[in-house]
Image (cartoon, rainbow, N blue to C red):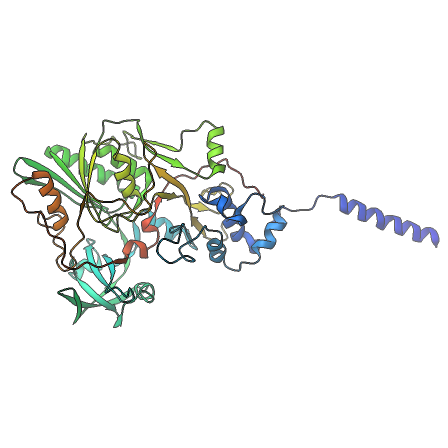
Length: 491
């Protein structure tokens, strides 16, 4: 009996020793944590301010099991995402407090992809929202432009139309997002009476449909004396419409324009590559010179440095993404129209061209977005290759700061215009018409004597939001490709 007991004890003892000597599976990610694990590892690799977030440090967790315990604290990936950002707008809402104002996460990457390509559920009315008064509580809306073949166009909605409410509810800073979120809603219209927004009893109902927006909104030539002024209103840096943009420049070149006005007043951004190609369309004499340089977090910078990569430098190209030759105007001076809605890739074009040509900015100060993002999917490479089929989450975090040839990129407070002029919400004018105030200012500056400079509006309003910021990613400046080869600290 003693021998049997001894044998049993020996067997159990050896089992414990063998078990303790076997490596533990610290790399296992429970299925319930799959999305959270993707969020943490993607931000740990690429997030611009990774060194400022202790929970994203390479040394924060000893192994996957340790990381898992942390991730279990977050039932929703959105909450984890916000907690891992550096001073996000959601937690630092007061002006000037937030550092990360633009990183976003989507539960359905098809929606994200559509927005980046200019395809959204849209009723066709591009809208600006403004505070009614200094209390900064009540707001009102103004239609800025209308997309062709949209419900707003079918309802004959016009630029300058003012509304105070939706579905009979007066707009304020707390309810606007919910009211605009409906697939169909009714705008309660108002009149502009000496700066007062007065309900007029009229209304119009708008319904959303899937629309793809051609960002080349207006392309025309205005003759004034000996000047042939090319005017291009461009509303989004969408790669799918680069050929249409290039065709607009081909037309302007064929017209033999002497001057050029680029209207970016409602253009809140898009592809960095498309912005770089637009810069070559405007110029053309700086091929393969530096247009802009990207500054990443230390982990990515070290990777690029060790691989002798020039990926972070954007040069003036000669071809579109489709390999089509770029039409260039070879300009040495341009005029650009801006407002508080001008952001990211639009600001990149202005700042990137400043060291090369004379850029005359007319209008209001821009938003001040000098940072760019990438789309991260849940896959081994964070690209769409071998993507996790169990969910559709994707992130669009800020990953880089962008500067021009001479290293300047500190314009988080916006780019200041050379000629300051806010839009007159009581008389916005017709886009593309020489008498429209911002365009008229550009023409007067170009032509000189004989034309009166437009006056400042008698009353101005503080910008609150617009269609672009309501749709979140409309304000993005992004790269088309994710840098591969970098590895997470916790695997």
